[in-house]
Structure formats: C-alpha cells, structure tokens
Image 1 (cartoon, rainbow, N blue to C red):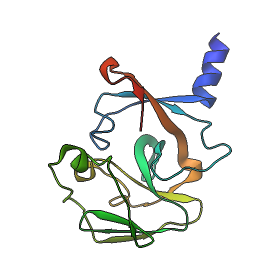
Image 2 (spheres, one colour; image 1 turned 135 degrees about the vertical axis):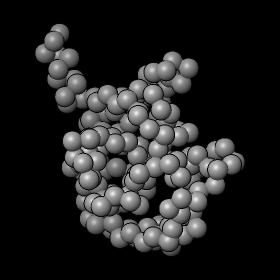
Image 3 (cartoon, rainbow, N blue to C red; image 1 turned 45 degrees about the vertical axis):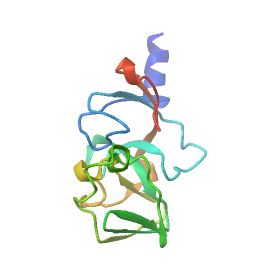
Length: 164
C-alpha cells in the first residue's frame, strides 16, 4: 500500500494548495486541487487548460495558471483584451467578467508575445492580481515544466468538484 501510494503521488497525481488569489474566481485561496500528471503524456496542453507547473523564474516553486498561448502563436494584449493571431479571445472565466466589477486594468497591455515552439503562455484568471507571463523574467513555460493538468478540487467541500 505504501509503495502504491508513493507511485501514485509521484507519477499519477499531484496535490496543490492554492496560496494566492491569482486564479480567482475559478480557484480560491485555500483550495486543495488534484492534478493529473499523465494528462499530457500522449497529448499537448490546450488553450483554456488549467495547469500546475514549475515556476519559470523559481523552478523549485509550483504555480497554477491557465494556458492562453499555444506554440507558434502570437498573443497580443491591448486594453485588457487578449488576441490570438489577431482574433479576440472570449474569456468568460476571468474574475472581472464573472463579477461584473473590478475591470482588468493592471498590466492590461499593450503586450505582444510570440510563443516559441514547445512552450506556452500562461496567465491567471484574476488578471489584476496575478503574477504571470506578463511580469515573469522567463515569459514562457516549456511543456517539460508542466507537471499536471488541474482536474479536481477536493477541499473545501462546498466547492468540491471539477476545475474548469
């Protein structure tokens, strides 16, 4: 049982406790999340996936953010709107879009990112309160640094369920 638990923890799931509000309202401070380590073994991350990864500027830390830019894309941010290769991205998960208040004004652009092959551009859902690709010294996250896809919130119990 101990060996099975160690194997599952190291190769199948990852546990994450959320210490900041960078992903509000999707994920709250204090939420406990399971990530599936094997999610990208035979496929690539997709736009909109929430991933757990090694922080680009501090690899010993783990972060959780949403995949916005895919390899080879140009991501532009202007006045709080994200564009992928010139097309506006619909982001109903943003804290500012869910609450109808607190518009995205902090680090709202202009930015232009050309996402390298085998790398991803990741942003938090609470754009006014997220340290993400807009401020990191090492802007992009390689596929090798993505540890898991966040799949399930198991605590607190009143928010128990899938992470989207």
